[in-house]
Image: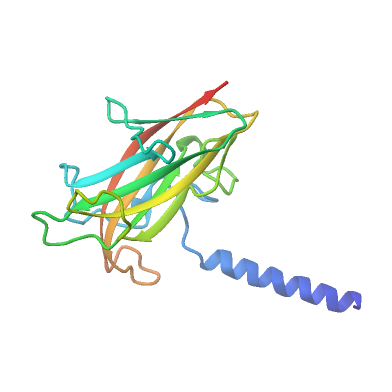
Amino acid sequence: MKRSAIAALVMGWSLVFAFSVGAYPPAVGILGNSKDCMSCHVDNGPWKDDGTVIIDIVDKQTKESLKQPDGTFLIEAKRGEEKTVLTVIGSLRQGQSDIPTRNAWIYVDPEMIGASALSSFAPGWNINLPMACRVVGDKWDDSSDADYTVLPMSVRPTDAAQDGSVVLQVMLTKGASVKGKAKEGLIGSYFERQVTLRVVE
């Protein structure tokens, strides 16, 4: 293949990549300075932190909640070894006229906001799924009258990892944002949970 053809091909793919990146909605702390979901969306939904909303992080292997007595969560992992947890988000149907249809969440290290990194998770920690947006309907607790989303996330502290913390930002939503106007058309309620990361030597 001639050099001119190769150059044209590379330039074409570069333009496609640039367009895709520019068109993709900005995520909190990823190549930007957005500190939370409220920079793009509004907290106008009916769902409140009153016991009807379920936000949990569960050890996938033991199925035990990682919630601590003070309401925070603790993820412990051996250095160099992978640990998988489940992000569980639900909303009780009882007494509610509006039920969320889609849950979105992201784990953010506030110190990574504005950093030139593709991950806003704690530095030194490898992670495969720090954020997601998922339609409700996953099976979790059959004894609970709630609609859930449940998704696994694997973390692995590298040699550079230190004890730290991240914030789990959650949005329960219904409807759809207007293209280019994220604060229109979508009903959402915003929540935060503190998550401590601990390296086990």
